[in-house]
Image 1 (tube, rainbow, N blue to C red):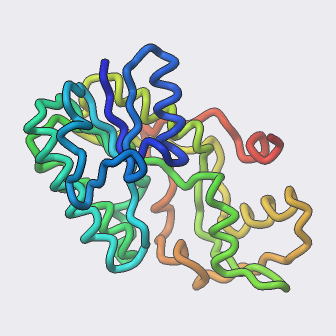
Image 2 (image 1 turned 90 degrees about the vertical axis):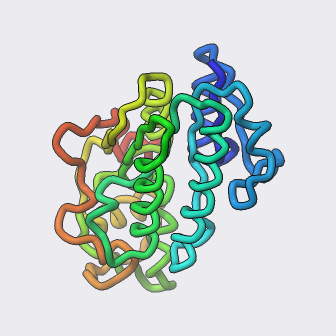
Length: 244
């Protein structure tokens, strides 16, 4: 079937397209570089023509107070175009525990995105994934200097981007969930512990200091970012991913 993948040239999107195409689907990647702009609606009617499924993997360019406006506009434009085109299934990638971290503007923005999808007329599915191994280096850099890194002990359950892509594919080719599927990595770490493991794997001698006020994820309470009951656990462990 024809599947339009918005954000189809990014980290997750490119892998989703590749998996779908290998399975014989007509998966088409769309992004600003291909002439499709969800903020303006440019190219959407053409991108969604004859599509059975649309997968939205686009992301706000910032994590700040501007992110809600991005998701409001892009989801309104996408759902309006999808309804007109007769698309039968809309899939969005979100975050495990996104509704439990109201102190973060970006997380509030993702909840808004989910709510817009749920209120729309197009049958939908939401895939909530935990943090990606691929982003751990960026998380470390937020609170790092030449001497060390400060990270909170916030529990996380990270997973490989390839496993996220597979989870998105599995949902996209099925019937609309009209709900949420949670997916997560196989192991739970404190973020500070994960930082130490990652630095050691890179041969980085900097010290990780536990600071429960450091960085964005310090705002996540308790086990908000941990897989919920019934979540699908991905196969790739942190050590397996680091060894690649």
